[in-house]
Amino acid sequence: MKHQAGHAAPDKPLEIHLGYWLRLVSNHVSGSFASALQARQLSVAEWVALNHIEGRADITAAQLADAMNLTRGAVSKIVDKLVRKQCAVRASSPRDNRAQLLSLTPSGKRTLPRLRAIADHNDEHFFSRLDAAERAELRRLLQKLAEAHAISTVPVD
Image 1: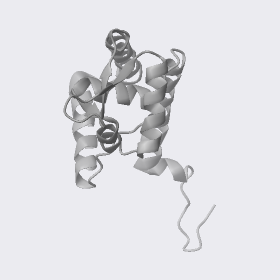
Image 2 (image 1 turned 180 degrees about the vertical axis):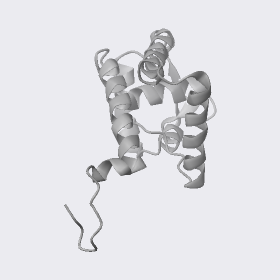
Image 3 (image 1 turned 60 degrees about the horizontal axis):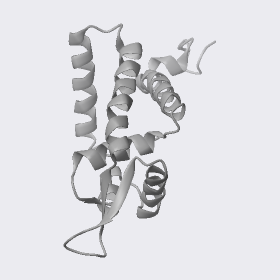
Image 4 (image 1 turned 30 degrees about the vertical axis):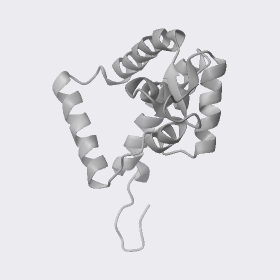
């Protein structure tokens, strides 16, 4: 097969693009993790929210929405699910009764390390072919690209 200019077309035109390989691997890594969470009746967005709630005492839903780069309505639905699953609670702020502070329940605190173990296992499954130096280099390169393009939003899907 020839292009109009007389140059041979690549046999696999998609595969010459780094974005193709990045998306291929990313889809499988994130899909596997999402499935593992789904087996525990949790979504990736709920996992991200749990980590943010644990990482910051006295976080409000509005602050969580900002941290997750989601609308307040979307975060409200996520928090509602976490409350129903008894992983998180809302409590009135002692300084402002209008503000609702989020925190993990004892069940949420016990669940989060188990979920982190799932994330660790997922990473090990997909990246075990890379030695420690290669993993560090891949992380460094991806962080460099994220910084160069001002990509700081937390992936939640």
